[in-house]
Amino acid sequence: MITFLSGGTGTPKLIRGMRRHLPDHEISVVVNTAEDVWMSGGFVSPDIDTLIYLFSGLLNTSSWWGQEGDTFITHHELQRLDGGEYIAIGDRDRAVHLLRGEYLKRGMTLTAATAQLCTSLGVRAQILPMADTPVETVVSCSGREIHFQEYWVRHRGALPIEGVRRRWAAPPVATPAVVSAIGAAEAVIIGPSNPITSILPILECRGVPEALEEVPVVAVSPFIGHAPVSGPAAALMRARGLSPDSAATRDLYAGFLDHFIQDSSDPVEVSGAIRMDTLMNHPGVDEALAERILSLVRGG
Ligand code: GDP
Image (cartoon, rainbow, N blue to C red; front, side, top):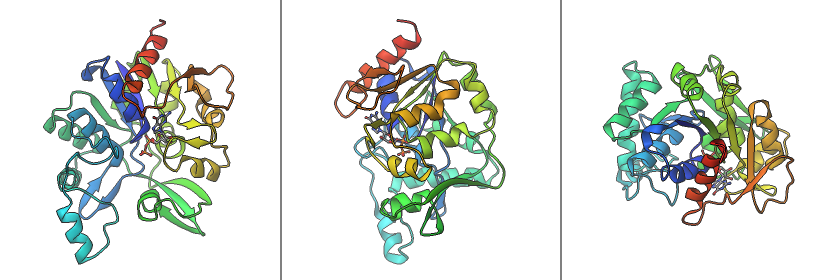
């Protein structure tokens, strides 16, 4: 089994390639939940949704969120009535959020609710929320703290950010399922996800760093030069006092990392890094990258 640590864009692209080489039941994904938010009565877990939709064949792979061909009738009506729903939630996507919210209100854990949704949608991979207690990434903008979703979706990442931190009632603990998915893995792959908002929340769950020390770990950089391939990772790295590049990313994972992969065209030198073509915007690149990583961990 291969276990991924994932956010909702970069790593899912690599997982799409890995599905060409491994059956879904040999793939586990530990997923960031620090971007989750209640919205219009439903519980949105954006990174989990992307993975559930990827594995069930429903994902809109142009945007890497939501379901392909979804309609937005309810969203437009909510906008007209009240204007408060700042995330464009599709109608079928919303059904998943409403059901997840119902499961949580009935006392199910997020892990159990996710497993139930996976069963309903025929997902054979193991999709595991990093923790079962709420964690939120919040950013400070002009002295005010706002949820990451508000920063990125409502304000389109246009506000200058001074800081980023996690907010919780109790420090998150990795679920038993997460610890065993890491412990049982042939290798763990930290895909090219945003280090600050997607990967660090997982690494901050008690039990995760210790589990990673016991297995081979490969990480893929989301940066080429001093910019991410997409999204707000550069501003977030800077808000943490870090340089937005592969070298700083490698340092964040250094405690348990066996191999670090950066793009062949990345001008930033990271000693010991392995160069591969990681830009998965063309057909076949994801599949080829996944194959090379598999052969690396299998000693090929
Ligand atoms: P989010 O949850 O939507 O923020 O998604 P992730 O954290 O999983 O992924 C966002 C990161 O993916 C960004 O920092 C991008 O730089 C990175 N990314 C997206 N596409 C690619 C790609 O094709 N190659 C690489 N190397 N990184 C990518």
